[in-house]
Length: 76
Image 1: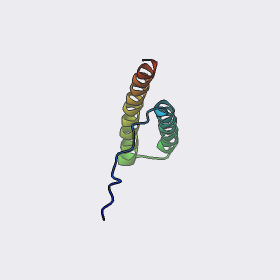
Image 2: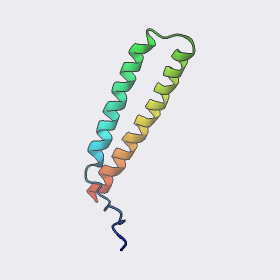
Image 3: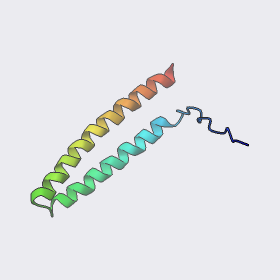
């Protein structure tokens, strides 16, 4: 007897904005913590932290754009 419960979950996007907002806040907190670490870092470690924060900035912009899209979709 086989189990055919491999149905995908329905697409529930009702809380996407809240999840994205939390992700933005968490990313900002991580950036702030790494800025503190920068004070005590030098050389390659310092450059890696700076590069990661740049990627975080890009990610935040992407998340905010996605939040805007979600808001527009919810208004339709």
